[in-house]
Every structure is written in structure tokens, then in C-alpha cells.
Length: 318
Ligand code: AN0
Ligand code: CP
Image (cartoon, rainbow, N blue to C red; front, top):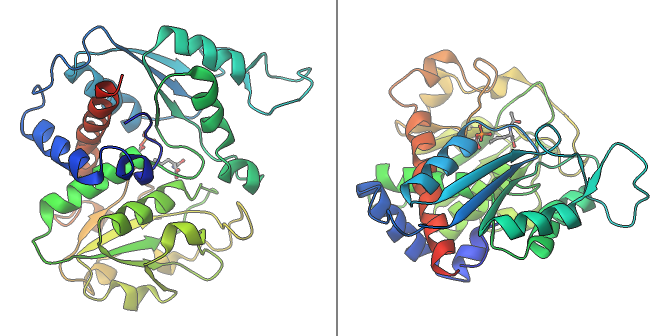
């Protein structure tokens, strides 16, 4: 595998099954590929904050014997310009063209976190920053959450669901939940496309106006009534996102969409999932998050597994 930015990169290279098999092996024995990354360097570039992605990806690299260099753009390094053809007389000191090319000299693989700006939909959905990194660095790139996707999260989510739910095809419900700030669609887009690629029975529920981009949800059932969506669910995956149509807008903060014990009671004893960080008593109540049904910590633990499997396959192709 030469890059990992979406489920398609996995499917069109080694295949989803191979990634899942590798995930199973590293979950069973985290040191089974302890030399796979020997004398290789992973650079991790963060345009935005992170707890899980930062720590789990470094841990995954360590388990593979790789060295890591972590860079926070704008605070550790120079502020970067990402648009082409601009007169750089503003705040940004360096262009991503040079910065990426230089980092490609120091690193064998680069990871990049670059959230959607939520102002210009075409700029975000063209994955302008991620694609510039791929083009100008000249080395394999792994997405640590880009403008439209969070594939390491989605792979960890899939691993978590497959480890829990019995052979029967599970009913997975992705539900919008309220949040005080405008958030990207990336986690929801990515979760949907991975669940559909893995042939899950996916139901997506959100208030009107929160429709995701059609290319991510083809094959899912879309419902605007959260209660009926939750009926018989095996998995409840809560996430906030801002509007795609009225790009970046908050159209609702309706607290009746918060996941409560009453909502969970409609399900088939569902497990509760969220990628974290989560706002308590906004997205989900304390009772649900602190209950036996919540598997958010196992989900976060599987971020090491997903990062390790992906890095292993990127290393194999060097
Ligand atoms: C980010 C998002 O929704 O994309 C990162 C989630 C992993 N969340 C926040 O900024 C709260
Ligand atoms: N879930 C996730 O990606 O968390 P961080 O933003 O803390 O990395």
C-alpha cells in the first residue's frame, strides 16, 4: 500500500481483508512485527490538536521498531501556506510545497492531520492540503484525519465492532448528536464508507439539513426520526457534524438528539461508540457513557491496532 487516506486506498491495494488480518495478528501479539520498521522514520504533522491519534500512532510506530518525529504546524514549525499562487505577504511564512518536500527528505512515511476549514467546501472536499502533501513530499502518506475522512479511526471502529458483534450482520446506527461548535463531516463520512465497505447494515439518522455528501452514504438507510432508527440497533455510534449543504453551518442544537438511557432502551442492548473527544451531557449523558454498554475506551485502544496494521502495510511497500 502506497498511501492510506480512505477505505479505497486499502481496498485497491492490499485489500480490506488483508488489513483486517494484519490487525488481528497485531492485536493478538503487538510485537509480532517488531522489526518491520527498523531504521525507518515516521513524521507526524499536526495542523490541529490531537490526543488519541498522536499517542496511538507513535505507539504503533514504536511497536514496529520505527522512529517518529512529531511536528505541530504553526507552533513548533513555521506557519504554512496551503493555497497555490498566492502572494505570501500575510501570516504564513513557508509554503507547503517546500515544507512537504523537505520533510520527505527526513522521513520514510508521513502522517498528516488537517481538518476541514468549513469555509470553502470545494477546497475542503478536494483535500487540497492532504493532496499537496502527497504530491510534494514524494513519500507514502497516512491520513491522521483530513478534511473529509478519518480512516485510522474508521478502521479502529470496524475492528472494535467485528470483535464484539456475533456472526449475524449487525445493525449499526450512526446518529447525529448536538454540539456547541461547528465540526467537520470527516468522522461521519469515513465511518459510513468503511461500514458500507464491510457490508454492515448501516442506518444513518440526523435532523433535516444534515445530509452527508452522497458519495459517502450510498447503500445506507437514511432516517430523520432518531427513535425509529435506534429500534433494534446493535451499535449506536454518535457523532456531531455541521451541515454539508449549508456548508459548515450549525442548523440545530436540539437536545432531544442527545443519547440517553431512554434512547438506548430502544436498541438491542446496543454498544455505545464515539471516536472521542466527547462532550458529556451534550452528545451523550453520563449514565450511558459510564455504563457497561459504552465501549469508547476499547475503541480508542484499537487505534493502536489500526495504526500498526496500516503502517505495517505502508512499510512493506517501501
Ligand atoms: C474533531 C472532529 O469532529 O472531526 C476530531 C474528532 C476525532 N472533533 C473535535 O474537534 C471536537
Ligand atoms: N479520535 C481521535 O482522533 O482523537 P484525537 O483527535 O484526540 O486524535
